[in-house]
Amino acid sequence: MQLRKTHPPSENPPTSTPDTHSAVLVVDVANLMGSRPNGWWRDRAGAATTILAQLSSLAGSTVFFAPVGFVTLVRIIAVIEGAAKAAKPSEGVEIIKAPQDGDSSIVEMTENVMHTITEDPTPTTAEKPTHGAPGEPAHEPPGHPVPLCCLVVTADRGLRKRLPPGTFTAGPSWLNALLDPYLTDAPSDDASASSLSQSRKRPPPR
Image (cartoon, rainbow, N blue to C red):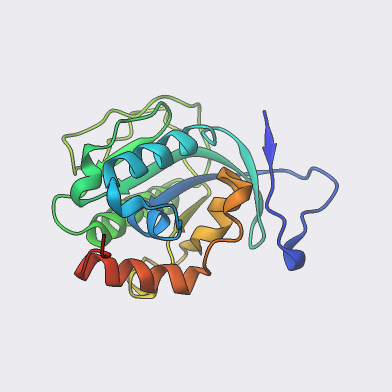
């Protein structure tokens, strides 16, 4: 299993390899997209397709997340909205096409995951989930690995406040560092969130 790590100065991972925790990663794709100054607004579906393909490389990987330590991503959920819903799927990534706003779908998915953790915190044998209709959460069949924590990637402060207690959060810069080291010089999480908020109201000039 490949080990991937982040390298912020204050969060250097330990040199030893301790026990890992299982985790579900929920990604606010629109927010992550807005953190990348790569012209994503010209082709939102294409930009989302790129992100989904990159997320696929993380499926089943062990990564370092400072508040918890090493976590194995047993499930990756990507929430997409608007024009990005035309993105092409990637193996190992569950796609949720938000029927309305992406934030509400992220909250709903996170609540479902946290309920699973509360009901049974003991991991079980892995089995692929069955997917519902676009915009509907995937159903966990018997044997699906039960996560020990849920990590939501978003810089949206309003969304973070709506997440259920016990949810861990990380900004886009943390995930960008895992997916593409060249993106570590992108705008800060707060700046990217503000930029995306403005872009949703008014597309950038051509």
